[in-house]
Image 1: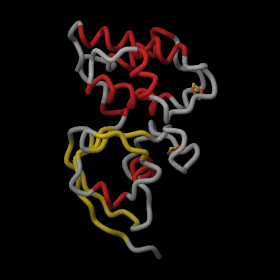
Image 2: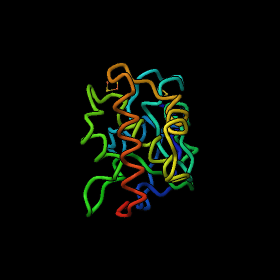
Image 3: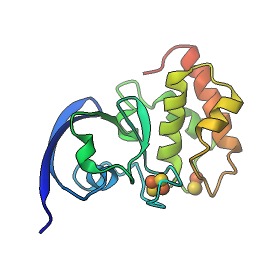
Image 4: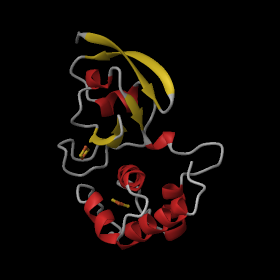
Length: 162
Ligand code: FES
Ligand code: FES
């Protein structure tokens, strides 16, 4: 039986705690203990970005992050983006522009773009392309993703971002 460690952290604005296997990744714990299936396991090696979450304001590959390192942190997953006002501007822009195909990369893309726009709501195409350098999409060719990112930035600058 593997050793479990009790951790407490803030998850999508809520204080939570759990006993987690000492060797588990943050991705596994978020998906299996907290039923947050947005972040995906694709490469498991930090190469594709499908598992991107935001930890203390920084984007992280949750497949490489030990779950025990979540202790005391503030964590945001794609499920934490929407609220009473509906979808986050980045999520809405993905829907509006058709930037979602199979969807496997989408949560990671959305989190990385939201992270980039939180840091610079006026980010242009070059900056947004750099932001998703570590996010692999096998379907869209990235054109729709960038279109969505630019539209989301515009929407956020115009107000109404949650
Ligand atoms: Fe984490 Fe690919 S699954 S980077
Ligand atoms: Fe299929 Fe990106 S939409 S991998």
